[in-house]
Length: 213
Image (cartoon, rainbow, N blue to C red):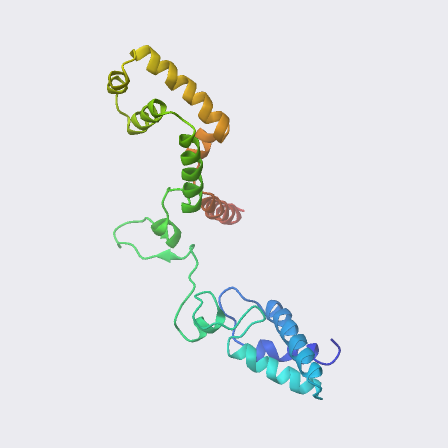
């Protein structure tokens, strides 16, 4: 901390390129962790090095895109991959060009975004739905499938030779069972906007508020 870190702190702002959202302080912390690992390795091997040696090789590693978290050159988010020009990280708040005769402005997030749920959320709900359906008899499954398609329940009543009122009674009971199984807020969760979109909206509103001050 007394001999290596000061060398890193003075050299990194000049010698190391910032990649993406990195800042100098972050790189100094990353380089400190890397230097500590290098120092531990050489001491464990019984070798003697100077603080200048450790600082020099740490800076070289940082310049080549290596970080304490990894040195991959194929991971799209790694610094080495971006330094090689294979990937480029772009902010979702970046403006995209539009036709000149319009006054509308769009960000990259507006162009790429949609209101569909996160695939992981959909997958987990499908698993819950499959587990719930597995506990139901065939008639109830037919009611659920017909309701999901928006179809009439009369063919279901005819197939199982029961009255339409019996089917309606089953449908109401199934609605209660679905809520008990998946939670009372399942309907709100199904129509709630994707969580990742909240951050974009909040950042945009915060920026607009600052501009009005």
